[in-house]
Length: 189
Image (tube, rainbow, N blue to C red):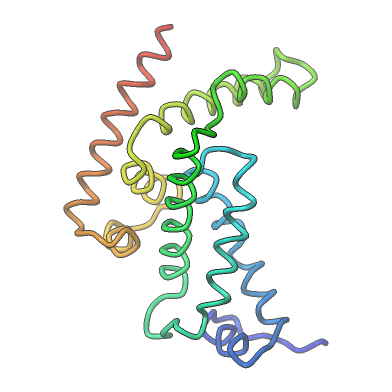
């Protein structure tokens, strides 16, 4: 089908509600990168991220009829994503399946032929950030990720997390303090 789709998410959502699979594919393709980034940074285990992303999209398409076009679709999608990733992370941690730093270092080494090049340095920096993020609370990590990686305003983060803007600011401030302390300790080792 060569049907042209309107630019707005709302028009795509209306088409999806009517059963248009092409519109669903357009909506998916438009937002998949952001959803994947958020899940990656909250869940932390690269091996579990794809399952979490799939779970997000299942929830979105199962509940698309509940979405009200008076709200921003991106904000609603961020809420579904953050809550699903938080639940996924908590379930994963409960079963003590988290990846250790040695596992991450081994994965970084196997994906790069030359351990001395910039890719490995970047991987080690990312590993240290990931380790530090893993040690802060999931709410602090989520607020930090949504603010600094996804560049969302505090009001939207508050809506996503279901808390006040003051609570979001507190989560962000505490996450920054904890990350600074943890990364300073890692850099001195």
